[in-house]
Picture 1 (cartoon, rainbow over the protein chains, first blue to last red):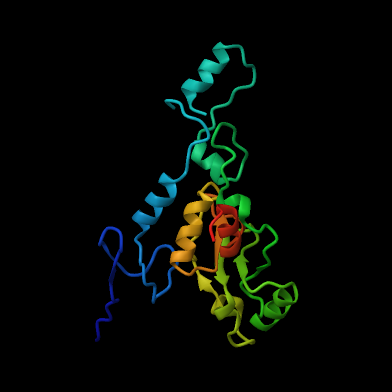
Picture 2 (cartoon, each protein chain N blue to C red):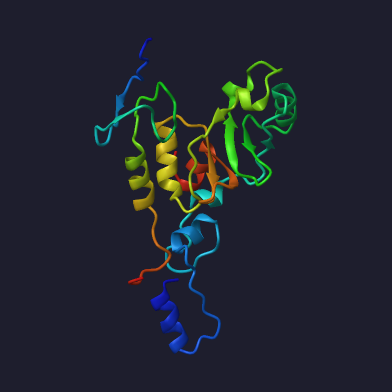
Length: 54
Length: 159
C-alpha cells in the first residue's frame, strides 16, 4: 500500500505548514496564506459600527 | 446588542429593546444595516453582485454554461434549495466537458467571505492572489452575492 502524502507549503505570513492557500485555494498560489492569517487580516480590518464595552 | 446595553437602554426609557444573542458580528454577517461613524465604510457585501447566476448540482454543465454566458457571466455559484453555497465554477471549470453534471465539474467548498469584510483588504487580497471572484455568504453559508475583483478594486479606490 502506498502512502500518499500531500505536499505542504508554508504560510507567507506566519510560516505554518498548510496544504493549500485558505484565501484562493489555488494549488499554485505564490502567496499561500493560512486560514488563521486570512481571518486575522480580514477581521481585524473590520471596524465595529460603534464602540462600547459590550 | 449586548445584554448590558439592552438593559441600559431600557433604563433610559426605550420600549422595544432586544438582546441579539448571536452578536453584532453575526448581525453584520447577515448583511443587515448598521449605524455609527464606521457604518459608511464600503464592505464586501456592498460590492457583491446579487444577480450572480446560480446552478444546482444535477444540472448539465453545457446547459449552465450556455445559460450564464448568454447573460454575460463567466462564473456561477452552485447552491442548494436553501441557497447555501456548495460550489463554484469560474471560467476554467466552465470550460469542462459539457456532459458533466455540475457537481462533477465544480470547485467544491470554495472559500467564502462575510459581507462585513472591508472592501479594501478584500481588494488587496484578490489582487495579490489573482482571484477573479469570491463568493460572499452569511455566517450560515447562504449566498449574498459574488464579489468581482474589478468591483472590489473600484470600490476600494485602488488602481
